[in-house]
Length: 98
Length: 371
Image 1 (cartoon, chains in turn yellow, brown):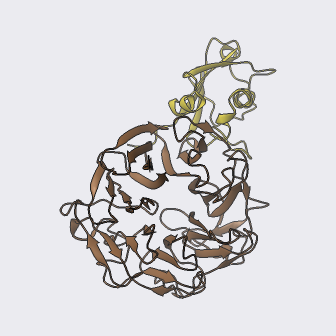
Image 2 (tube, chains in turn yellow, green):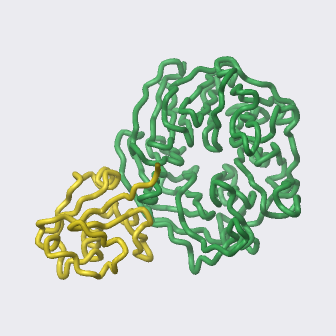
Image 3 (cartoon, chains in turn cyan, brown):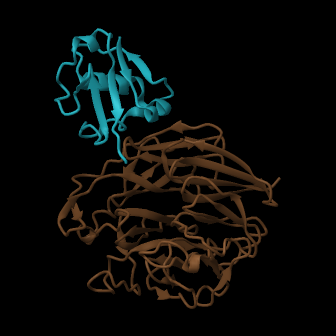
């Protein structure tokens, strides 16, 4: 199981805790994880990435194992620690304000 | 027992205020959708327990919520607003061409006859329609592809379609207003649109009398007199008596004819309400006094309504969707402010009291009359 930590706004919207666990078939990439998240929680479609272009929304960030994957290709393999469930993929609402 | 349900959208969630016919004691529920921008919420006139909510946030985009039990429980429905075809461009602030981009839903207008049909006015300006209770949305693209559309420009708040009025005697006739393009009308349910801005004059555009480019802030109609509409423009209060074919100014003696909302009394089609704001730079009431102005003559002659409203040191704004009326025998008038107050007058504006004083900044107020 892949562990995903959602920002508060989205965990409230989805009616989950901050961390969800999800099956991701095949290679564990950001794209594959988001597909699985949206399949399990359709209410999150369009809230993390654009419905049409699949582009990350501007104020969303993807962190894992203390690395920033936000601007990597979403087809990049996530670290083994994420694929094995030892570490979560963090979906983060960026700081915006002062 | 008769009563009212007031749907309040704020910068940090939704609140539902309920009272009986006296409108003296209030129950306050919320926040629903805590932390989210609630641009608008409105109930179906056919089934008052069906309520639609526009929930959005810069981080997470748009969600539409729906209740079928008067706001006790909610279901997130469809949030995919895709422009029809290749969206093209419109003018940006600097005069360059800017791609049409969906940002949020400003206004939801349920059908007058079918609780599953609802219209959504969005930014960048377009009109969408759902016929399945908000699960799926289709653009009525004849509006956005109007020959003038590539010249529409956003106002400071974005290029938003914020007002939707359905003619109760002919539901194929729909009026919308866009900042800053103006007012448009369809007579065929949304396929063909035409700008209906003759008589408007706006000094912020090169040709003050142009067909489009006007910053209309809100429009209102009494259902018993659908050929007459009232408009609060960026500056000027306007009136039409020929279904928006021509407009004339009725600002009269208001202390400022700048403002955002305009409403019509539930039982008196010639009684209208505005909230004068000092100027487009000073978004607060003149002289620090919150005064709703009422005209019983369809405009031109206005009287200030002050009893119960703050008359010193008041520097709040009342946004375009933040005034509403109920249709109880003694018509109620409701005003929500950017300072978080919601005021009610249960007697057509003669006296006012605060229902709540410390909500987040109020963006919209809609009242359901429950009989």
